[in-house]
Length: 53
Image 1 (cartoon, rainbow, N blue to C red):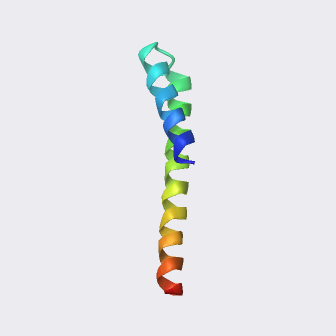
Image 2: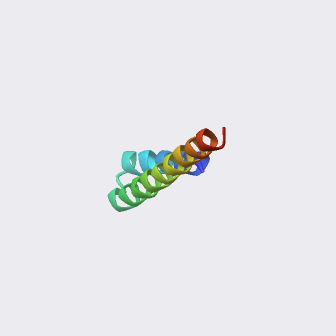
């Protein structure tokens, strides 16, 4: 999932450089959502590991 967040981030940067504001904004939004989902899953895994130990 982190891979896809980075892919959308790179797409957003490239689109912004070429002047495609709408595509850049959408890609950045998707990358941000994927990053936060990954962060929540990671923290959940850490908490579950601490509870089981």
